[in-house]
Length: 137
Length: 138
Image (cartoon, rainbow over all chains, first blue to last red; front, top):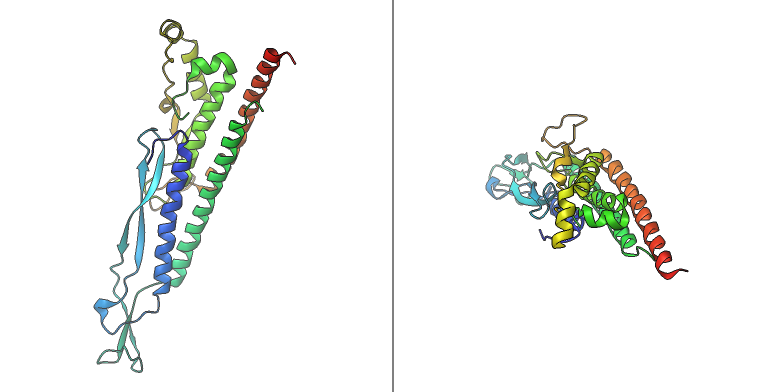
């Protein structure tokens, strides 16, 4: 994080970047919710974004955030009997990733709300900085 | 600009409002940190106690030592330590991930802090206008 005169933009900006990673992860999970496979080992693994705090070195007490990692779920794939599916294995089973679309949507809404509030912070900070710049006019 | 509030110089020209403006900006930064970390596990929300910070800043500006340093060497007086006024937020309800940020509460606090910043800014602005009137005589 840069040591600038206006750390509020760095802080809110870091949050925007982190929430974008989280939104992308949710999008990838939802997009692959129905991608089945005949081999349980090659099924798509749901991903989850991990956030961690980044203390601002120039300003004690202030902290941004960063998406420190994207972990793959270890939940076993869901086994479904679909003998008509061309991807089915010898016994007629296909394997789908264990993705709960409702949980993903909740994650998406939470992320979008956090993104919105950080945009609001940036807009407010910008407005205040502009008023400060026009001091005495 | 950020946490080192230059109390001495600011106090001379803008009175208490210059000092207050710096502290208000520092508080906005702290609240922005809270909002940015609304989803970070184990993040503990913090806030700046404005009254304590202003008291410390005023005391530092009035201390004879800082004034002496200011006059003899012309260097800036020591910046006020804002860490002494930092407090951890008491969570309204427990959370599973150890995060104590209440997004709605922080939002309200941020909006209020922004308004307070504008108020302080208008006082500083008025002082600038007063000085301009005195200088130009118009």
